[in-house]
Amino acid sequence: MKIMSSESKHTTGQVWVIPIAASYVCIAVLCITSIVWVRSEWKVQIKNTLLAVASSAASQIDAELIDAIHDRSDMHTSAFQELVRRLEAIRETKGISIRYVYILRQTDDPMMLQFVADADSLRSTAELDVNNNGEVDMTEEASYPGDTYDITENPALQLYAFHQPITDEDFTIDQWGRLLSGYAPIYRSNGEVAAVLGIDIESEVFRAQLERALPPTLLIIIVSAGLMLFCISSYSIIRR
Image (cartoon, rainbow, N blue to C red; front, side, top):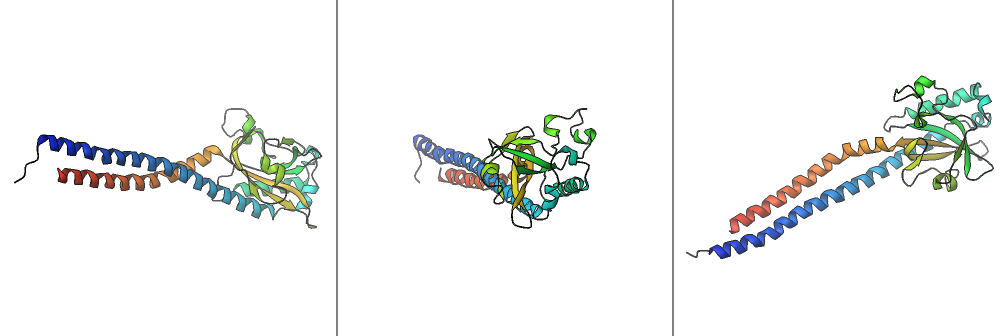
């Protein structure tokens, strides 16, 4: 019977350290790659949902209501109140946690839009105070007819939103926080664009949904990689 020397056993053990270490590296790389992939795919899914909701909702908004609203003096009109109610209904859309819904129109300044209505426009101070700290923070403030919005840092609103449904390429930051937005034009009966409907979700909501989606994917990868590592280790022991 051939007996393996202690030196040979030591050499064999060293040889198997390499594939085992490589397996650990593969597991780490797979986990990181999976996180990046799932995040990217989840963002695509959220964007598609934003597009679908914005497009559908915009097609149901009467442009005549928009044309009847010019500034805060119109907030008492039935047209404004009806418009806000419709925006409130859009915010309650199931399947996506919408934070803000609003309508913007163009002005003489290409880098400045004007609010027509906001789903929060008719809310009281107490209702606007979402975090219940006793005051309305900047991120909780409503927008009102005639309020302006600078789009210098928002390419989607500058170039495309008044022509076709679109989403921001990535999260944007403004007074209301870090948001991912979807937009769709609102048309008059003659085909002209009256304004744009915007809907936003907060980055915190996106992160929370992503965290719920990640564990199952990572678990599958870790278990699969663990089985691979177990097989390699077992084979190493048998070979010894």
